[in-house]
Image 1 (tube, helix red, strand yellow):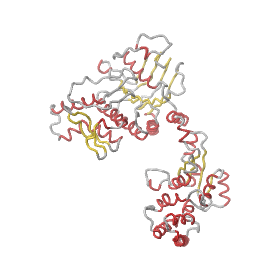
Image 2 (image 1 turned 180 degrees about the horizontal axis):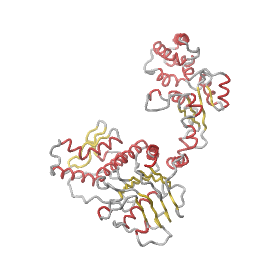
Image 3 (image 1 turned 180 degrees about the vertical axis):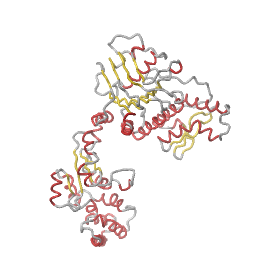
Image 4 (image 1 turned 45 degrees about the horizontal axis):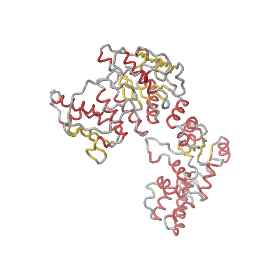
Length: 533
């Protein structure tokens, strides 16, 4: 079941709201905008539509009727919905057009000592301000289903483990996809100590009540979908703020898993303003644009007639989304200056070598320039042209951010450097970052730091020899990078270094960079190269 259009009249916050032209391919619809704008009210309208469709509903007109407008006597006139699919005609199936979960999902603890028959699965939400607790009820349903299955004979050829997996395997799998260290292990003893038990880290038999709020929130949603998706197999799923109590990374995982559990013919609507949910929705949209629709409620005057269609997913939209999700914090965490530098960008390949230059720069200048961030974006050409549009994107999202492009000097001529500088590109005065990190001053500081100042001549001599060997191999006299491996090995040997870094890159990042501090000549020179405004 998928929605084509919606029209609301004199309902809650809305004078007249029309949502139109929703594509039949839309699998996910995201309602965006700040708190109090009316996103949850739309879900209330869907519930009202069910009332007009013949499904019982609370008659709280003070809650549903928009203040100051004539009262509507017929529930069906508040909300009109068109679907891309044919509506069911039987009473039982009419109640399965919508699946609802409010944002007030909180069942902190439960333990059952006896089993009781559950009513047929149906809509339990009357208003989206009501508490919505389902965990205990779903526990009863799982146990009852398993008891019934035992005597059905359908599972006689299965082992106990296979039988158990038949009923809790999907919930366990979904939880593992969201939480790496949380594994649903059992349903306990339903006649004495019935509840959900988990394995968490090194703890076994971890009681449901001891889960964090975020773990409970995710478990509640995933469990409910697993239990009810066979009944709501052709429905519009509406979940208000599914990210409640969860941090950003887990929010994205949860949305991904909810979409994975969503039956094929169904549509998921969520009301959210969290970065994690929005980012995952954006990723889904980038992969399959027709599968995801954003409805932007921000900056709308719902006291007047409003028409909403699928939002254009451009930089302006994301700028508003970031502002809604983070508020004033967006400006606080957004760096005042972004320095694009050379180096391998972060990716799934060889992460240990990614962002080496950027990480070293952050270490060096973190104290004096806390509002500056460094980003490795590739080779010199990628930096000079901002091929990954990193700087441009950030400047679009957070106007006023200063963009600096920084490249190595390498073998560039004086004229080449002047041309780059005239184009706004900064060029290091030394050949590359390694020349700063392995400068004589920094190697001397290293000897002093480990309490071996008397070894300075020996370390510097080793560096000179490594540079001479590099030149003999055909490298430039100032190419410290080509000699850095040998310098690192000899310094480590002469000073008896331990825990200084297992590779030359780790040594530069973790040992050399922290030695480039304010007051050193190298720091002053590097600062001038980058920040010489």
